[in-house]
Amino acid sequence: ARKKLSRLKKTPTVTIDGTPVALLANIEFPDDCTVALENGATGIGLFRSEFLFMGRSGSISKIPSEEEQFEAYKKAVTLMKGRPVTIRTLDIGADKPIGTPESGTLNPALGKRAIRYCLAEPDLFLAQLRAILRASAFGPVKLMIPMLVHAFEIDQTLALIEEAKSQLRAANRKFDEAIKIGAMVEVPAAILGLPMFTSRLDFISIGTNDLIQYTLAIDRVDPEVAHLYNPLHPAILSMLSMTIWAAGKAGIPVSVCGEVAGDPHLTRLLLGMGLREFSMHPAQLLNVKQEILASDLKVLKPKVDKILVLVEEDAIEKAVNDLQLDEA
Ligand code: PEP
Ligand code: MG
Image (tube, rainbow, N blue to C red; front, top):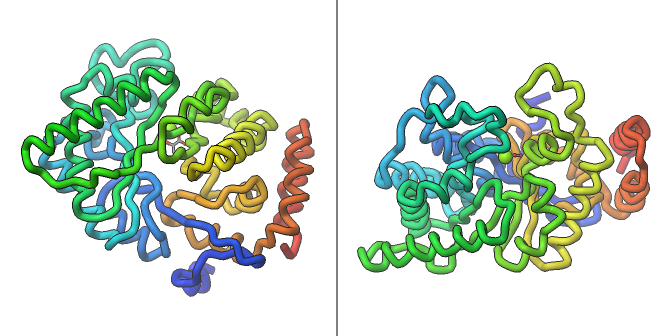
């Protein structure tokens, strides 16, 4: 089946009714760009930069210098040959442990992780921001911030990005002055307070892995509760459709970059909610493309509207499966 799918690599991703959809890749290292391109990605929707900081133990073991980071980001940008590369700033803590004694807190998922860590370590953060900005001189780069909750965190982050830019100007370093800055939306508070984001940022990307964890209060890495982790919980569907709708209304691009985006069983549901940008593990790209090519939004939209008013998980699951069985 993979062999056949590979024929879709160069086919433009358009629904039956002619709506274009962006299929982007999630990567951990610059070399992953090669696999992304082999699978027809038209850009990188999520470069998980923390992997440059993590050792074999899976925890933060080394802090790469600005220069090392710059080389890694530039490599990804160069490999993507003019396609957009969305670089997410350091997302450590919780499932990606920091490895310091204080990271052994009782609830690391609710602790000093991601942007909270970076704002507490401005020198480390500024070095990363400079490295990302410098890479933007070599092709289209977007900057993405994880785990934002408060407006003041967004403002502090934007101020630090400005500071990194002035440092580069002072050093005569080139970068894209108009670089797009966006946020991961991955906490219910971010969705319920979405105007804080849409009024300050250029784009948003929904991180369903964490959003499901924080909405359903289920540790995403705890096997004891894995059976309760359900993307089709009505609360999750509400959050997704609300966010896609609100971003559209605010006129800013929205993507989904959690695992949900790479699940071909959920492609039609997301399309029917209005999603037009999917970012996923490269291995899933052609499976999802196949679904999109066989989908007709005119048929899907009313069916998905009906699913969005269902409140029982069983009924939702059945209706989502039925979307798959249809010709369109
Ligand atoms: C997410 O939370 O959905 C996401 C894409 O980021 P990560 O899995 O790296 O936390
Ligand atoms: Mg996340």
